[in-house]
Picture 1 (cartoon, rainbow, N blue to C red):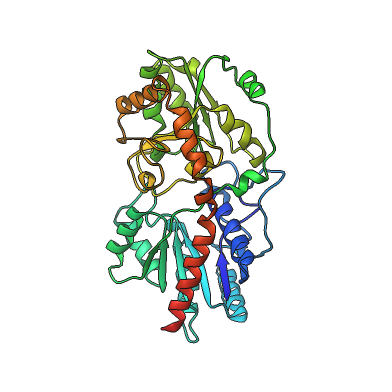
Picture 2: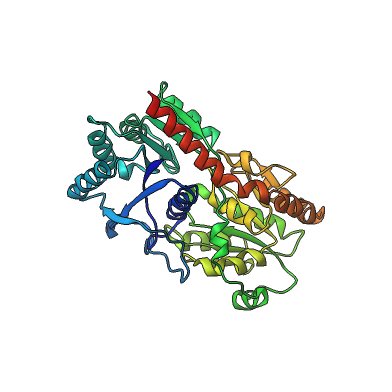
Length: 385
């Protein structure tokens, strides 16, 4: 089958770039002729909230692709349309996650729906943005998504959102696949070196908050919970990831709750090579999200055999099984979060939960082949219409 994919890849960084790269790799490994069209630029500098959108890894995930699309240059939209027409895929996979992509994806999909129409499926990483979801965001999402022949979502809450926006759409749910291929490119490091570098006492248990620090991820609730946990346990919080916004906000929060000495902020995007040392140093990964669809950080944590303490939002409870591979607490509840962390250590849950995470490795390894099968079945279905 001939399948085309549009999305970010190296040298761009982040979870969706990794996702696109691994998707193309697995489509090609399954024997499909796969065309991959990526971006010459994602965002203009003045629009991007982070310091850089480039991946600093020395061993990044890479696959062969064509860099064709600039989302703010309409000439490149037409160039992509001509390339897709020439390659004649049975299915084109476009990816949607924030309203910024509305103009380019609307024009591209509209042109490709003219005869002879190209079948289009949109992979929705977020039907509505994490920090939005208002009337304008819903209208922009509808403008784009209604042009697809089918939508692929990665969580039940996103399936509900898509159905509410487009009641008659063809919607397919596929769980977010594993991000473990990143780990095969990562070099090992010594935990003791990181403890020394971050000035974490040897006896302290370590909580890891990993990923871009954005308001919807609820870091302030974890800082509040940390103050309660430290009344009973000697723990240390590692916050590893670039802070989108003011680092001083979280530092003042830590000072207000008297836990400055118990938090280390690593305020930057870390390379793939650093991941093993960071995750293996942690005793548990804590993700106190206020809202979410899914989280690639969960998949990373499981890939390193680490249980996850997280909140009952979005599709997270579909992946983190309470009492089996982690613990689930209500969102925006620092006391419940503190109780879960204390329980994790005082009841010595780590061995059992870790064993369960490791036992699910085979199932996670099948997640990419399952997604490829869903995509190819969808392509056959759409082309029979």
